[in-house]
Length: 392
Ligand SMILES: [Mn+2]
Image 1 (cartoon, rainbow, N blue to C red):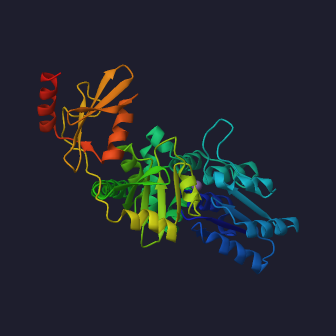
Image 2 (cartoon, rainbow, N blue to C red):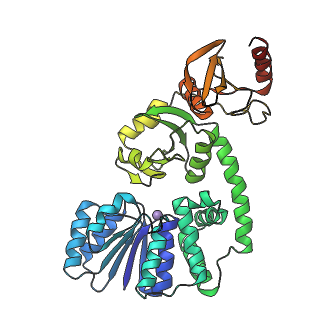
Image 3 (cartoon, rainbow, N blue to C red):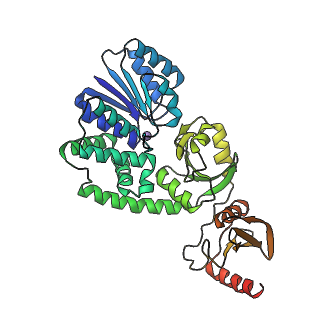
């Protein structure tokens, strides 16, 4: 018999699907949240079941279980942990641990891709184009490579995963991958996914109007309350507001906090680590501890949401050659314009600020962070620019 303890997200359940393809009825699978895995491992070890090969995928164990598993392994127990989170790299010190964040050629890994490779290499299953394609979609989704490659199929696979139950998803996929040469979505799924996409768009539009910003531990966070679509939300809001280092998504009912960033200079696994959580460089999470609740909920509750930039501007746009006009709640206006090749300056009302910036973006970040500024509407901009040119 085989037992698989895996994560309860697409990548974790992807592991369940390849395990089913390899072991069929001989594998018992449990999908866990990060915090429940250790209880499951304890339960397994306490039960002292014989002749069961334990796989742990997409999750890592705590120190106590690491010691117990190592002991179990040394006494002849079969166990294999496979993960791709860099917070689990220390488990490579054990013979039963295999943690790899990227391939030799630099491709980011996912638990599903690692388990699939493992099962094929060890003769538990034969590869097929359909499974290759499915595993690659899961990998791209989990590592955000889908964003870089604009692979919407990967995003749709994740959406489908959340639309139906785990069991239904696993069953559908296992049958589909077994019986077909290539992976595909069926007609009904395509319809449901199209509807779902429209729903997500509306949800994000609403959430955009609820975002507040706050400096926490030296980084600028955009804080929003949401119970679903965390990845899409983190991504859209991050792109919309590049002056924010990361987006923090509070799930108050679940007492959880998720972090997402689009920036390479920010590591949100570190941010989550401050509150006892973990995850990836670009996506992480933690429990809503007292400290996290203080920083992200209490301290931001009275803040007013960020104002959105006008969507219909034709002239007052970012990086416009004539300069860009910002305004804020205090009715201050700021004009950000290029003075020489690598220099942008800001006029506040009629006075030039002492700071200059090497790029437009740097100037924009300065204004949005320090003054809570947003893009002024075209009419205001046109009046300002005419006046500016006249008095130059
Ligand atoms: Mn994963």
